[in-house]
Amino acid sequence: MTSRARAHAFNTAADRYAAGRPSYPPALLDRVAQDAGRSLSGARVADVGAGTGIATTLLRDRGARVVAVEPGAAMAARLHALLPDVPVVRGDGNALPLADASHDLLTYAQSWHWTDPARSVPEALRVLRPGGALALWWNTTAFDVPWILAQHRRIARVCGVEPQSRIRYDDGDAVRRAGLSGLPVTRHQVRWSRTVPLATHLANIGTRSAFLVLPEYGQRAFLREEEARLRELFPDGNVEETYVADLLVATRP
Ligand SMILES: C[S@@+](CC[C@H](N)C(=O)[O-])C[C@H]1O[C@@H](n2cnc3c(N)ncnc32)[C@H](O)[C@@H]1O
Image 1 (tube, rainbow, N blue to C red):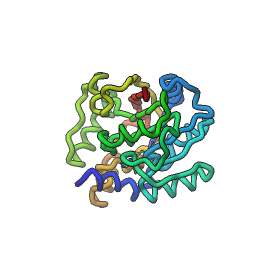
Image 2 (image 1 turned 90 degrees about the horizontal axis):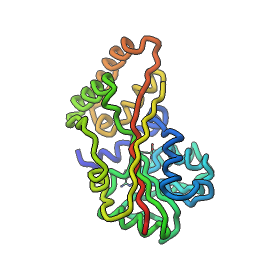
Image 3 (image 1 turned 180 degrees about the vertical axis):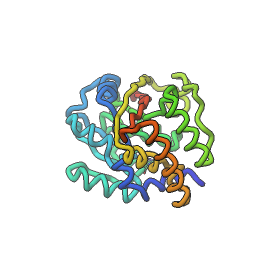
Image 4 (image 1 turned 90 degrees about the vertical axis):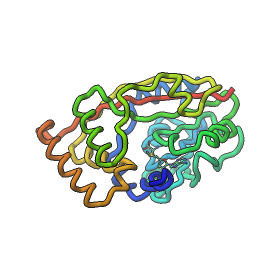
């Protein structure tokens, strides 16, 4: 399965995505503003790989003048239905459909890893004004919560991928892996939780790109088993999901 096919798989699950995926905590947006060195209010922001608009909504709610960039047709349509006032441009991070030095901030919420940094870093630097910032973040797995670690391993097994290491990348590795070496970069991690109905939690599992490309019957069987397990752990039917939001902010010199 190519990375391009997996990235495209999101398109087939735009509704599930909008219903199940977690948002991001206020403390993360505060951090983005702080590390970017300016308020989000009035900032010219492009939210790239915007998907159904989860991060776009938060940026817009903080007063940013935000444009959404999204390669997938179904995701872009879902975003437009949710946020009709936000301009949506079809495009991707490797060739941004945006003018030189036109933005204060570029954001990639869970989408930078779909780009090729050899192309997306120069593109970001082209589109940012001098002193502008590129903010990348991911809701990562809280491996220290035993049931979350166990579920992570089960999902990796059914998807036929390696479970991720419990060892977190140090700052230098994180910067290198993102292709940001040589730029001024800050990194912060924000731990947070949300409590959601079991059905939302299962929908969230169903939006992972590696899971989405499994055959339908395999997805259904896995989610049925997961539901039975979680009903024992959370008898009231509400699941507490914990995340560590991992944020990198690079500044254009
Ligand atoms: C995990 S989703 C994140 C969506 C949204 N930012 C959020 O926080 O929910 C990843 C998104 O990246 C998009 N994507 C795939 N390849 C991309 C690329 N090369 N450049 C930018 N976005 C890409 C996908 O279409 C998908 O909408």
